[in-house]
Length: 428
Image (cartoon, rainbow, N blue to C red; front, side, top):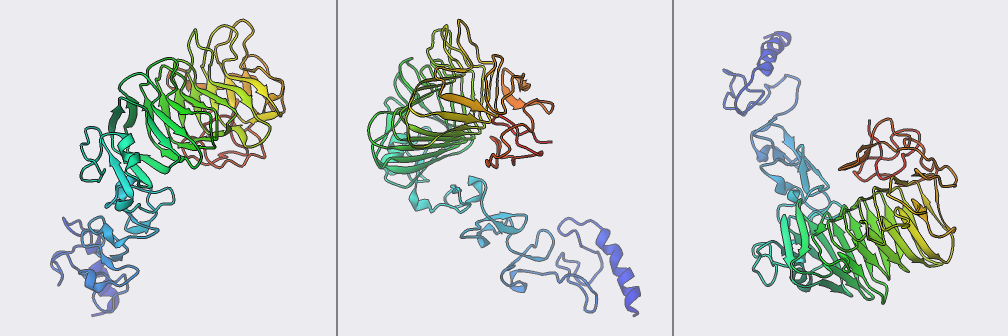
């Protein structure tokens, strides 16, 4: 048969639908849904099973294209090492815990954790060694299991005492909806002493009671480290975070609705970026958004690309950012410090002339500084959404030399010629 005629006879079959193979063609020699191309016809070589495939595409996509691929949802185990997730039939770095079938922990580098290196914690857990099959019921138990990683399941984990991480290095991961709270009044989580290096991802720390108790505390002594990424600290009666030593790093996080203020940082180094610090403080509180009782002369002191808004405090409180003792000049860059409730001489940013803002939206009271503006940033909703409207005056006017590459949502910066002020980069 002429090859052109044969090709015309085969092509209509490619448009027909079938229950198990989109290339199924009734009446052809392989109408059992394992069709292969006839010899001499140009086109991809289809497979009948894994035996027809070889690395690096060693899996036959029997339920789909009938072609050799790296992996399928039916055989995700074909992926491992640095690219453990099967996405669109290709092995890639993981981006979600659910893509790690064995451990249910996706590490920041895109690999999956070894299940034996993870302590599992869940609401109602009764285990004492914190295995995946028998999780522990408190974060304190998870930390004391001595594993490098702790995984918290969806739900609220509560204890009747402070969870203290003393001189340990541990990384805490959380499923969506995972919360850490405390059943009675007191600090919820405390990080202390040298060698403490704690990293927390995606957890909500909430419900703390007692106006004098911070939800998260780093007390005086040593040089502990705490890093919060995509963490929410909200609805606590005391201050959200109190750091008096070591180094506090916050990125892509939210500190919101804490009655006695958002953050109090005294003497500690800090690196805070791409975060919402909003709706903290109350009529009688001495702290609004952020209070810096003391900023030392050396170390990291960065507060860039944050949205600090709708915080309040007692009469005369500088309810956006308050600086008291500043040993050396500091400059906060590309923030929105706007609409915080002030009265009786209080300011959006005040307390020390050595504590200034540049390339920021500060107001409604004006603040001198390079590149600053004093205009309504146009939030989507002052009650619950501090992202920016597309016509915001904060758009495309952040520091042109800024190097932060993402915003609070992980959207790339800049979307325009320059980045936007605040935590949110407007995405078309």
